[in-house]
Image (cartoon, rainbow, N blue to C red; front, side):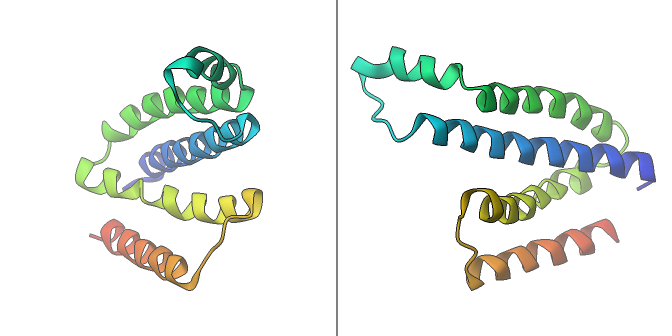
Length: 123
């Protein structure tokens, strides 16, 4: 994989991970809600007007474009598993930004993902 291909894939992964974090920030701003018929419109409106959610959706749109460029250069059997790096990024950023817990079991899973990505990229 050449540097440009790797850059496209990693930007796609970063945008996808960023989208998840922005969506989480937007939902946290809205707070817990029960999704019932009575509150579909008010809760839906509150969600749809949160800037982090709008930003997260924009990240998804941009990531699709970058991802298509990356897929034009890299085998999907290599590119798609690289998305698992998003789990690694999100786990640490969710810990840092939202106070989510990183247990030993989660850290072991992250280590396994990283080993898998290294093995995959060397094939």
